[in-house]
Length: 268
Ligand SMILES: [Zn+2]
Image: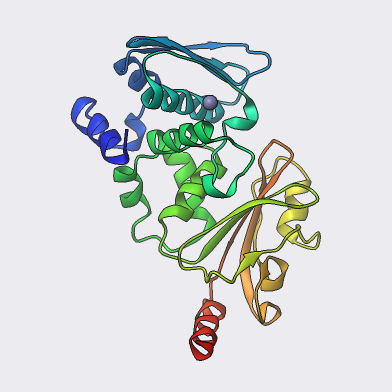
């Protein structure tokens, strides 16, 4: 089922015209799928289905947004492999991710995660929501609230659709796990390979459950590119709850990007 097919399902069959009307349990019911919330051990969610009926069970002990993403993920399995299906999905498989750059998650799990993202934030409602907004952490926060998703799921969808140079990178305490750049970031720009412990937003995130800190830092704190030490970027870091940290980086002043493109043109 494509993006267009999800739009058709939502608009024509379910009459969904705004994000608050997206109830994944109702969407599931429409697709012949019953959703149960139960305590689960050893997996985050599962689906068992035969012919045109299936049952999804999600871990009721997980946070609300996590359960929603899990239902979307299992529906993804159903839409893709409807017929006979039995899947146990581990917590580490059900993640909003930039599929091509996350080598940890296997093929069908990636596809299910992409379905989850589109079911929760259908593009026909998402694009108008961000249209006309300048880049900022407030936009991500507004997506999180409007679509009832995690900050990370909101940020990944935003990076895919925004018209600004922005980078989202996921780090463990020792190294970069994966990253995702919007299309306006020059291809020779990379997020640094390990978190710079001097980042105020990272230090703030380490202190626990506080709203993320947004601030201006030297670009070389985050960006591995020529002349980074001469420019600045905006940073926000938050904990994902799985021992990793997400960094959302953007340029308030895009001179570094513009200069870099010029330099590259000169060399070409
Ligand atoms: Zn799965």
